[in-house]
Image 1 (cartoon, rainbow, N blue to C red):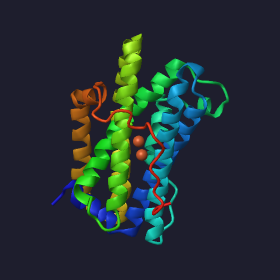
Image 2 (image 1 turned 60 degrees about the horizontal axis):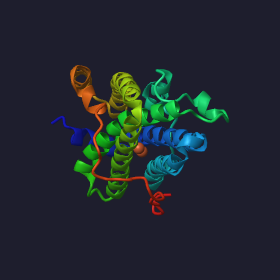
Image 3 (image 1 turned 180 degrees about the vertical axis):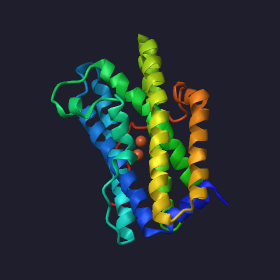
Amino acid sequence: MLSAKNLFQEILDDDDAFRLFCSIAASGESQGGWENGRIAALVPASQRALAPKIARHGADEDKHGRIFNALLRKRGLTPVPVPRETDYTMLLEQHGIGLAHEQLGREEPLTERDIITYLAHSRVTEQRASEQMRLLRKHFADHPDLGRAVRMISNDEDNHLAYCHEELLRFAAAGHGRTIQHILRECALAEIRVYRDVSLAVMDHMGRALGWSRAKAAVLAAGIHAVHAYERLHGWRRMVTLAPPERRDALGGPAVPAPEFA
Ligand SMILES: [Fe+2]
Ligand SMILES: [Fe+2]
């Protein structure tokens, strides 16, 4: 039967597919880590209080990158180069979503608007990360090799999402509500397209690694298109709402270390 759980189990059982999965995940996480590290370093003076939380956000993503690499190492595998068409973070940047790497590479302080852009971009992408990790956690929380990693990353992504809600609400209360809604909407609509394209590309690579029949590949591609149709019509709205999170000050302390992985 075709289900998220069976699909992931198939990937898990195959060295090439697992290697590609972890390589893509590790690369996305460490790109996020680098971006947030740079944003923390370039925070404008007016938002200095936010810098430690942004740095913590970056430290978490770096840790996730190390965890995915550690999962590979544990199986005696080394990462493979990430195919361009599966590089979610890079493709989002190419669509002008979030802050450009070129800007983050400079030594100029960011503006308050840049910080809002970072938070809105994160509000959307952390929603995706949180949902994906919850799906993995639902099926693999007790898995002997993956369980701990999945539970830890999932908990972190929920923290990141809570933090974005909280900080964006703070900016909204300070009068930036319209700007925030505008950026969130633009970001969400671009993200659902990039997510569809990346999903199709990843499935294509997995299908070849796992020797899927044309019929199976076609069913999966149809599923991805159906998700996108739903998200374009309605689902994107869940990515642009703001509500006070249950977890307050979720990134208020230092990153929880993961010595068993990295
Ligand atoms: Fe992450
Ligand atoms: Fe995250």
